[in-house]
Length: 159
Ligand code: SF4
Image (tube, rainbow, N blue to C red; front, side, top):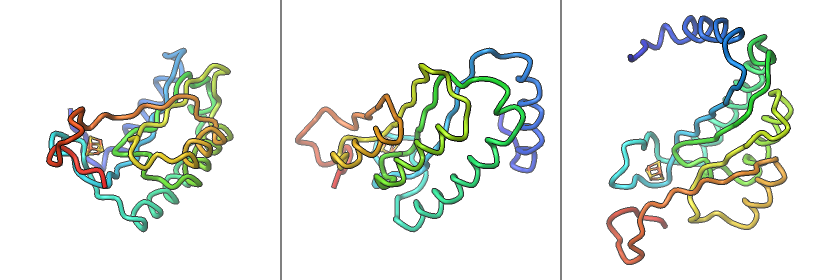
């Protein structure tokens, strides 16, 4: 059920206190709520990417990771999967992708076989992005297919 924003903090505390004793396997999800364009079929679009918005969000995300990593719940067990979803996480810069991966590794207790996924789109996924993602420790990629129609200009614009 929808949760009013003023209850987020209280609910997060309740859930993390309960789950310390309940779960053996845990997953971590980090959201990047930007896309360069809105695909016409998609209900997940939230914000158009702009360098400033993405940079401001990334700075806040780095602080959030630092704060959440210090919780007792966070350090109470291993994470077995990490998923960076969106939106379009590959709209982060290559340097940001590397920093994000390294921050995850240094902040959270990860299982040795932890699957760390970067979601995105192949469009503009450069060799540099791939290299930086690997340097950051990502070991799985999930690419959205906006259309199998290579001639269509209306389903999803990919400039
Ligand atoms: S890039 Fe992905 S999340 Fe963004 S609008 Fe297109 S399908 Fe939706």
